[in-house]
Length: 214
Length: 214
Image 1 (cartoon, rainbow over the protein chains, first blue to last red):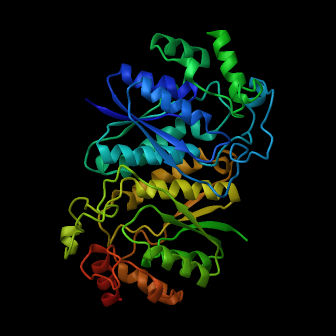
Image 2: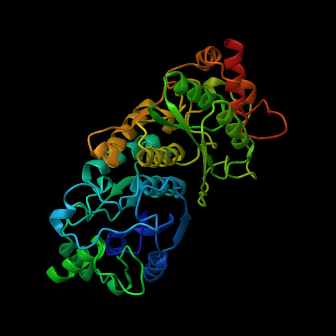
Image 3: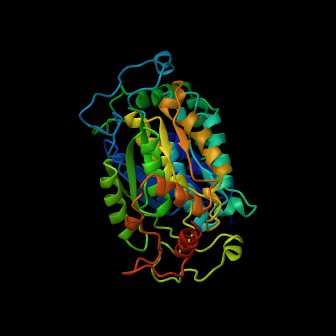
């Protein structure tokens, strides 16, 4: 069975990416990160999702002592009640410096070690917060680095970086997920991590909008 | 003063890269990794080198539970007594899957957070062990990812990935380091990490050859 490493955050997009990977016949190896995010709820959710998908979950713990993000610092305020137009301008304080490059680098390491032919990331560049490391042109550059910088790539194989959701609206992602029986009730999108979703951060608002439209 | 993040392993090449950065007028922020390598000697050396260069040192601790390298597993044998011709063929067991991609991703994160305009890596693709992620074409791909995937890059700036040693022989690196007063007696290259260098691993042999020729 073809192996794939799936980056799994516990949110809506990565959960859909996991079930997409399974529908494509991949044996999914989930990679979870504790990177000092404001709350650990999403890690718990990611573990449950992996279990339901009958996929092994590997947690990696890292720290970014230089900070640089309101997602890493509980003392800062999260952006609230922004509409899509506001989200489309600039890079918000929730941007974590080079997060996807870090996540992808570990995923490539994992893939190269276990002989996986793909790394799957639920990045999206339509209904998103404007993070530069979610855009397709960035992912293409990482693909090149993956091919040139891994053993598998250097030996004539390839580790494909697949981002099946990158061009989809949130509503289309959800409709895809419904077809794939993604248990969305077990996903967690809210940045704040309170007992219930805050309903005001970018992530909550994009999620709400997606479900309404779907 | 222009800031640069310098990847510092405690070896000969990265020490030279650090002193090169200083000679170019960069304020160097050293980034050290405890990634589960066979010994911690090189981390100790890297700390000392940073101190001598009067540069702050930031240690990041990561683990690669999937292994895939004899540098991560003390129970495996290191390649021994290989000549340059043997090193030029294939990728040895000391290759750590996607190590430089991981190191560069943290360096980019650090640089993006502190507003550094460069990341400096002592990668070399002449007298080396054949690691794919030391080659100039790989570093060029990472440059593109860095420009597209960071806040600084997306906002019209750039984080340059500089690899000043990539095309130099070991002897030329050492001659450059002598001019820059690199304290090579404080660098550690041996993979094994015994009380004295083993003199037989690729890293020891490349170092010996470099000093003889220089």
